[in-house]
Length: 444
Image 1: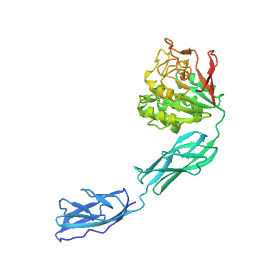
Image 2: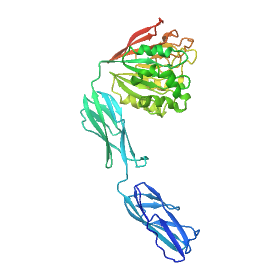
Image 3: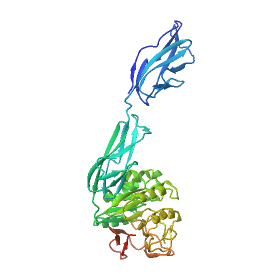
């Protein structure tokens, strides 16, 4: 808010007239305002001269050499400008109310008992700029949901409560509802999906029509370029009808459009932060992690560090992760990606059970393995490669070690039924095909 007065500056020499506009201003802390000085002779002709600007109380406001005033703290100060022995002044009042607000994200969350949700709080000024501020967190009922000093909320027992973020005199809340974990849940999906050329995406979407549960979409969802038109024309008519229950991970084709912007615009908050594209969620008795294999994944990278922290925070026994580029693959077109070993190592260190990938347009199941590809029945991670969502099929090359089943003969989806200490899997093919795969595994 700026309130301006029209009082002229003082005049000390009749041969020159120095005016300062405005003659007064009321600002909020962190506001700025440009003052202007004019020097004329007694006939009203402009005079060119340097202006000297000062403020008598710099703890309230400060001024630069061009007359731009920055409000610093509450109070009153006098702005003075001088030229050719003439002086003009203006009164500056800085209001206590600085127009700052605080917002919590997300605005609410549904958790299972022992599930976690990271909340963040941002303080902004009245211009929408982020302000560096210390935020304190508290909960209305720690028996229902606990919150630590970083905004990490943990569900304790069923019920609904609020968490509060405060900074100075500002406060914002978010509602948290905690529910008992169900005994089981269904996760179903595939990658390499929305291809207008093949029509396979409509066939696999029809399978989903009859399978309840949460859908994973493991990248390359809208061929060829992951553009807004590709999502509208090649994904929305098929898998798009299940958008409300889909949790996606981006593929390389999404990034054919700069920053995968169309992908993030299409899925919104369900795809995570557009600068990251990786996130986690609770599904029945399991912890699920969606990663972004298009960004840096090397040890110490932001994503790898986030993954380790997410795994450390999780209290569930069983965990599954999915992303696009496979660590292990017998596909002839792309094959194994050694760069994914760092993510696999983090998952292996924390005892994760299952990884799902795509990229090669085949189906493949591996026995539990270490990050380097050694068989490890006791602690290893089982990988499913499910690039069967509808794009044209790829060739299979030399079978990789520990590959148990592989096929490029059928489009289909992988259905996992997740129990408290185990999981069942089944590959469901589209009508007219014959390949299938099914089995069970135990949590570590």
